[in-house]
Length: 530
Image (tube, rainbow, N blue to C red; front, side):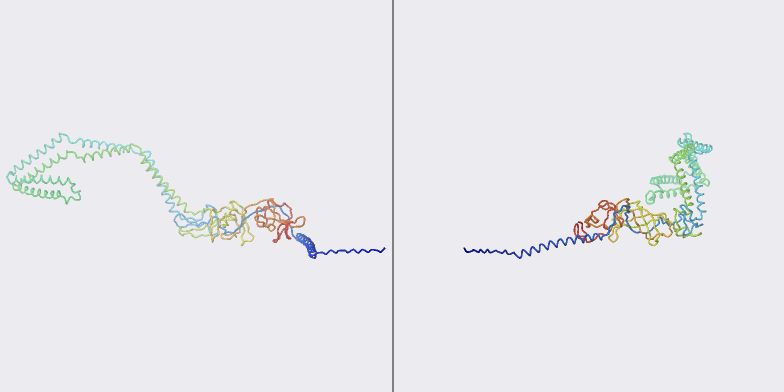
C-alpha cells in the first residue's frame, strides 16, 4: 500500500502599525509624567529644605501713630503795667527764672498812695453822713427855732385868712370920707367953683375913668407879658387914655394955679390925703396871692419841723448808702491802681525780653514771660491716624538736632474739626511734655510716636513673614512631606516691625521667615502647599 502525505498550511496574522505607535506614545507619556512628578517633588523638597524658618514668639507689642510737629511753650505773655507812671525799679533781667506772683518791676507810687488816702477820707465822710441819716442829730435849739417859725407862720396865715375886721374897715372908710370932705372944702375954699375949674375937674374925672377902663382891658389880655400886646387895640386904647388923662390933669392943675397962691398946695395936699386913705382901705383887702403865700410859708415851716423831729426817710438813707458804696468803689480802684504799680509774674517761667529801665514810662510792653512747664508739640494727623489717637495716650518724643534727647509725653488735645490743605484732611493734635533741658527750644521740630495700644503676652510674627491672601493674611510652613503650605492667620495690632497673631499658629511653630512672592497656590509650584 502506498503512503499518503498530508501538508497543512499555517495562516499568518499582521499587526496594525498605528496601534503600535500609539502604545509606545502612551507608555512614554506615563514614564514622562512619573519622571516629571518625581522631579517636581524633588525640586520642591529641595527648595523647602533651602527656606529659612523662624519660630512664632510670644511677647509685648506696642501700636503707635507717628508724626512730627513744632515745640511750643505752654504760655507766652507780653507783660505791661496796668496803670500809668514812671518806672522806679526793674527787679529782673533777661534770662531770669521767676516764680508766680514774684515782683518784676515797680513804678513811683507816691501819687497813687495819695489817691488812696483821699479815697479813704471820702469813704469816712460818706459813712458819717449815712450814720447821721440813720440816727438823726437835730439839737433842742434847732427844734425850738423850727417850732417858733411854725407858730409865726400859723398866726400870719390865720390873720390873712380871716381878713380885716369890720371895725378896721369902718375906720378906713371913715378916713376916706374925711379926706374927701377935706378935699372938697379945700377946693371950695380956693374958689374953684368957677365953671372953668368944674369943667376941668369933670374932664379930669372922665379921663381918669377912661384910663381905668383902658387899663382894665389891657390887663385882661395879659398886659406886658403878652408877646403880641403891641399889635392889639387894647394897647393903643391904653396909650390914648393915658395921654388924655395927662392932658386933663395938666389943664386941671392950670385951673388950680389961677385960684390963689396957696390953693394948689392945699388942694393937692387934700387930694393926696384922699389917695392915701383909699390905699389904706384897699390894703385891708386880702388877695388870693397873699393868702397862697401865707399858706406856702406855713407848709414849709411844718415840713422843716417834721424833718427835725422824724428819722430820715428810706430814700434819704438810700441816697447816703449809695454815696458810701460809691466811695468804697473809689477806694478799691485807688488801692487797685496802687497794687498795679508793682508788676508781678502771673505765672512761673523765664524772662525772655525786658523793655524798660528806671525812669522810663510805664506805657507799652514792659517784658515778655515764657512758661516752659509743660512744653507742647503741635502736630497734624491724617484722618486715618487721628481715629487711633485719644486723650491721655502716652507719647515718645525725639529731636533730630539733639541726637541724645528723648522725652515722654501725653496727648492733651485733639481738634474736633479738620483743616484741609491742598486737598489733604488733617486734624490738630497737641502733646504735652515736661522738660528742663535748655537745649530744647520753642520752634524746634520734634518726632512724635503716639502709643495707641499695648498688649502683653501675645503671639508675634515678623511683618515680613506675612503674605496677603484676599482680605486675609497667611504665613507659610514646611509640611511633614517637605512641601510649603499656606496657613491663614487672624492678625491684631502692629508696631511696624511685628504683628500680633490672634489665631492660626501656635507659640514656637516654625514659619518661613521670607516666603516667596511667586508661589503658585495650594499644591502647586515650589512654594505651594501639598
